Image (tube, rainbow, N blue to C red; front, top):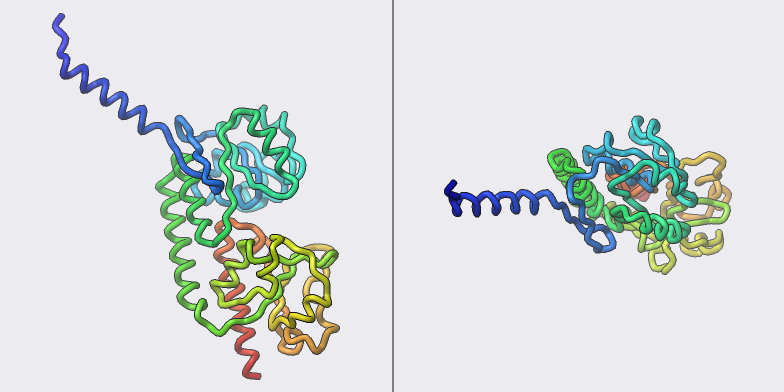
Length: 294
C-alpha cells in the first residue's frame, strides 16, 4: 500500500493544531499563568464574588462547591458548601474532584491556599483591584470554562456601563467621603481597595485613601477631624451603621443630611453587581452635591 506522505503530514499537522487549540492558558490576578488541557467542567469557588463571576461568565452549572455567603444568584444557594473564608473542608474539596479552583486571598487564607496547591489542581486567583478588572475577570473565567460567547457579551456590557458612569460623574465636583465597613471596631477601606476606585469614578474623595493598610481601624476622633461631607455604611444585621454619627451635629455629613446606607452585597463584593453598586454610590454623591445648595 502506497502512503501519501503529503496527506500524512497534513493530517499530523492538523492533529497537532487541534491539540494546541485545546490547551487553554490565561493569566490570573497574580500574573500567574493558569493552564487547562480542556475547558473546566467541575469548578470550586472560594469567594462569594467569584461565584457571581462564574455564573455571569456562563458557568453556573459547572460549579460543584462554594463557600458561605455565596447567595447570588438564587441557584448558588443550592450548591454544596465547602466551608467559609477562614476554614475550608479540604477533604470535601478533594472529594468533589474539581478541575479548577478559583481562589481569593485574604488575611486568613494563605495557609489553606497552600494546602489547595498541594492537591495539584489548577488555581485561578481572582482579586479585582479596579472596577475595570471585573469584566476582565469574567472574560478570563469564560475562557477557562469554554463559555466565551456568554462571558464576552457580559464583559462588554459591564464595560459599557462603567464607561457611562465614568463619563457622567468622574468630572463632577469632588465630595469627601468616609466609607464605614463596621462600627465595632470602626473599620474603613483605604486607597488599595476596589471601593476607592468606585468612589473615584463617582467623583468621591476617600478621606482615608492614603492609609497603607487595606482595611484600617480608625476611631471616631479621626473621622471627626477629617469632617467628611458624606458617610457611607452598609446594611448589615447587628450593626449600628450610619446612626453612629447622628449625635455629632457639627459634622458636615450630618449637617447636610448625607448619611447613606447601601446594600453590602453590591459594594463589598468585587463581582459583576459592583458596577450596579457604583451607580448607587454615584447617585448618592450627586444627592450630596445638591444638598450644598440648600
